[in-house]
Amino acid sequence: MTRETLINAIIVAALVIAPLAAFAADEPFLITLATKVVIFAMAGVGLNIALGLGGMVSFGHAAFFGLGGYATGILASHALNYEPIFEAPFLIEGTTQMLIIWPVAMIAAAIAAVFIGALSLRTSGIFFIMITLAFAQMLYYFAISWPAYGGEDGLSIYVRSEFPGVNTLEPLQFFALCLALLLGAIWFASRLASSRFGLALQAARQNDQRLQAVGVAPFNIRLTAFVISAVITGLAGALFADLNRFVAPTMLDWHTSGLIIVLVILGGVGRLFGPVVGAAIYILLEHYLGGVTDFWQLPLGVLLLLTVLFARGGVIGLLAGERRNV
Amino acid sequence: MSEPILKVAGLAKSFGALRATDDVSLDLRAGEIHALIGPNGAGKSTLIKQIVGELRQDAGTIRLSGEEITPLTTAQRAKRGLGRSFQISSIAPEFTVMENVMLAVQGATGRSFRFFRKAANDKALTGPARDHLARVGLADRADIRAADVSHGERRALEVAMALAFHPKAFLLDEPMAGMGTEGTARLTELLADLKTEAPILLIEHDMDAVFALADRISVLVYGRVIATGSVDEIRSDPEVRAAYLGDEE
Image (cartoon, rainbow over all chains, first blue to last red):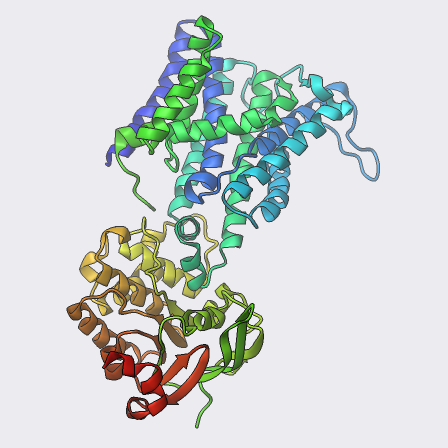
């Protein structure tokens, strides 16, 4: 067992024990906090596939996070108001079933990612960052100006969506559901990283020319990775909407994109559990320091600066040493 | 005579008023090493870039085994069997030596869109990769990060990656660049072995290596091929001596 495996195991244990302890202490709010950590971590796991493995600095992942959120919000609000989404040419009704909402959220994110990726990936570096940002902002302003689903005020969902056999309104059960998805996403990401596709993707990050010389077109590899990355972040968005029982355009805002990048960098770019650590640090700082001072983001900024300057592998890199590829 | 493996005909490329490639025709026949020499700035790199598809020529055709490859992208040409090594070592530095070769094997066999199985356990990748590493003498360096091996080993790694490709033709861009005498000797041996696999278009500055290895030599000066012939013919060609070789004596 490598040191990183050990650290990852400790993180998983903490993710399981912390909410159980909160449950025992009858502090349901702490469970909600832990759920938030898990959901943001998942958004980060998604971005980490593009950023960590593929070297694509997407500053527009809020688009996918928000689309996932709106998929939940729109489907659920129609179901709760008994209004079909479409009547013609065929009837589509809203739903509060997560098992339907999730695939819809993921497909919506995938379609957006194919479109955004296909255009953005023709550029690289700073231009890629700016174009992904621009696309996300377009969606943000669209959401603000579209009154049907709440516009600027956002969209409330009265009841959390349902999952067979789980009482999703019970914080601990909803947490367990989110945690299961997060672990699934991390497992998938780890398989992906060490697969043939992962090999090609990581080669695209390091040496584009070499990948072409062995007969693989980097664009196709990157676009596929970008879409996979968006799908995972989209699913996290769907969960986030259900956690808050509220969707707002802020989910699509560039602050959200920035936040997801910050989580990944804090925890460790390209590290499997990096986003989990990053999300935990962020959420805990926000909660505990935010209670003390309005300027809680100042220490966060200092922390981020220190990470970038002195710990390029993030917290995981600091604890587990340099990254090993594949 | 049979159809040449690689045939370049009437290739031309200008950058503004500069004719970097000026009506170049050359061919690469089965089983030979065809060396391309020329002074700095003669347009060797520009020519290579057009052959592999990184630059588009203004005029002329490039055929690989009789098939016109001009409309294809770099990746597609590589897939058709153009195995290339680079003037400056081009490897994935964070990968191990082994992973670099696995990547090349994967490129050659296609199937980069497999998302689940561990590549490191994939015998279809590791088996050939190990063989190729053994062939270039890197078997015991397999698990070292490519960024950490010596310059000479990196050149050998490039050759292994080109080998993994089972190419129809090798394009080796200054494989001896920056190598010591001993390294050059080893690589010379390796290239002589390599040519049994597929013919080699060798761009090289090291004249000793070229004269030792090449079956034919073409001399490129100011974008033009001024002479093509056997080693002896080139050595005795007065025009070549004036343009190039003379400088060294």
